[in-house]
Picture (spheres, rainbow, N blue to C red):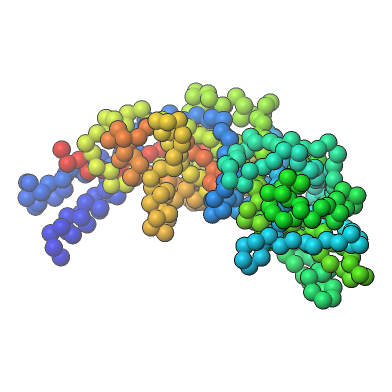
Length: 447
């Protein structure tokens, strides 16, 4: 074994077996000696802050949400969480990329017009096996499919509802009749919500001038999209997969005695925006927001546009000159508000503020993505040996930048993926007597 490997193994053994700075073995030559150490007593300041709006739509298809939360529920600890959706329906595209016109004729008869929303049970949170209500409105304000939209975005609607339904969310496939072939066919499709829309309103699609269907822009001038509004208070939120090829508005009509259908899909070009409300008024968490004294004991993290936890490391500059071998943030779960129906967040992420007042994920998360294995962590872990549940986050690369003065000494614990998750978690603060938030640092002093 060569000398460099020997030094590395000795160093790693030292880093993970001691809590005080220690010199390596005296058998090393003086010029090769390295001072290695470990600390988990860095002073931290923690407190809860209101979350800012989160992006729920971007024109880049690869960066769009995988699921879209819907509903309105209230937690006795965290308060109200609600999501209203705005969705464009577009004309279908053929293999060549051009729009496929319906070719409606004056003699065609509208049978029904149906809104189809594929469920995504992976996004369900809380109690969802109860009756939900939804009302559908037509937009009077255009959405722009190349824009970025955030969770505080709203769009104007026409005043009269075009459809509504009370339903229990399904988790099983359903049978429907399709009219895409020569004859009607009964097929089984993945779980979906189907809402019949107003028949008189739908007839406008059949009798519209054919110029409406010559281009996407002409069609969007005629039909700008829909709003999906919750009309019930429930014990949780559900979610839809609005990127599914089966989603959209289906026009069922008869021509010459034969049934036909034409789908206006929520395709790759369609804008899909979620508007979130997270209201903590009158709840236990309200007193903790921006309160550093209370943040010593408890802090809170929530999905959607909900709460984040701020962490300040005031003495990080005193470590300048050290090389960080490993820095791990250890965060224990208090669990206030969490139970079987409302589990803790599965994943946490870390952001830091940049000089331009924007936020960036810590570099260790970028490394984890690039290397395609879990460098960062942030995963919920069940407690063992009587200890609480815990999250551990590797911030070695980022904390080195903090020490070197390259980035802010402030961090924000946030949910991941925040725009797609309605869950929450209560954590112990930095001065809790038994389970404080700790930053565990193994380092090398080469000075």
